[in-house]
Amino acid sequence: MADSGGSGRGPPCPGAAAALRRWEQLRRRVAAAAPWARGLLAVAAGLGLFYVVLRVPLRLRDSLAAVTVFLSTLTPKFYFALTVTSSFISGLIFVFEWWHFRKYGTSFIEQVSVSHLRPLIGGAENSPPAPAAFSAGESETSRQNMPECKVWRNPLNLFRGAEYSRYMWVTGKEPLTYYDMNLSAQDHQNFFTCDTDALRPSDTGRDTNVLVYVKRRLAMCARKLGRIREAVKMMRDLMKEFPLLSMLNIHENLLEALLELQAYADVQAVLAKYDDISLPKSAAICYTAALLKARAVSERFSPETASKRGLSTAEINAVEAIHRAVEFNPHVPKYLLEMKSLVLPPEHILKRGDSEAVAYAFFHLQHWKRIEGALNLLHCTWEGTFRMIPYPLEKGHLFYPYPSCTETADRELLPTFHEVSVYPQKELPFFIHFTAGLCSFSAMLALLTHQFPELMVIFAKAVLRVLWPVSAPSVLASS
Image (cartoon, rainbow, N blue to C red):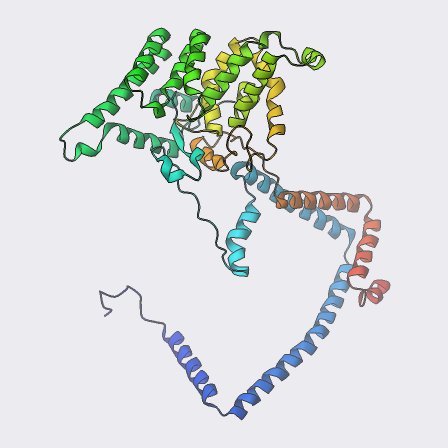
């Protein structure tokens, strides 16, 4: 009976153990043999290798001749079926590669080659470790290398379970990802618990978090119910009472409420305080600043007139503000211009990412539409930003280079049915070009074989003459 305290492995196979013992005995005999015996074994091995070297070319020549005879007897129908099958299979691979690239941003064949074939060929290379999962409560000091890849709570997330359930009932699609909901659960734990809960000498930290959370939610509910002035007062009082909690981005709620009131002077006052070089930026701040400057000139702006007389100082300021906003988050314009469909915003966003663009456009599109000509000015000028930063991942213009981690985080924050916006656009992988070319070439050969079977047979035989010039001529001549 096996020992219960062992590792759980069964006894070795008797056959395998016997084979190992015979191999060990043979190795010991060879090691103990006289030098002349070992030399004799080496000579025998050399003669065997020499025989193989002489024999293989003869067999290879015979095999080539047999293949040539077989190919020369094939009919045009075979070549047609071969090219059609090749085109169909390569077409399927091309469609799958394209789908995989659009969904995951990488080539499936390349990914499999790197992860499975490279260790077999040259060994695993020392690749940098994958970035850890993004956390909404993560401190800035732990992400000094990529400070812009931190996930933030969406300042305007006020949708409740009933609204998400109604969306799922109407569309049949999940509006939130598991990753996003898990971050929300972590947020609630951070809000409603504190370090002193174990000892309970004081609940001050938790009480402050609960107070700020409840007051902010009340202000957001008032905004949603249309009691906007009441919401503005509650937000101002909250910011005045807790000025150090600027990381909660309550000023973004205030900006949106003031825009709804069309109190543009108050909006400018808030921007003057928070659109500072020392404070973190957001799409709400950058695009609201661009909206205010566009408001001053958009009503009279005309591309034809501007191309004839040039831009005025106010128009130049508006265009520069739009370029600044687009550099910060290049995904927003397509949503504002309704070139891309919106989805329900997630509860967490990544600054400069597609998730932030969805959240901003969802709540601010109405403010852009309210100002006549603002969207027209945006449409005429936003693409000029990319001429100023041709290599956004290497060098920025007004901001740091665009982070390369946004696509991965956005795919975890946004639902799977949403087509994630990627910037800068990736070049198509080699294997997509290769499979597309192979599919097109095979389809062309199939069409030519179907239309001109005799000529294609002659062409196939000419190819055989090029590939096997030694044995092919006599066989082809006889055929």
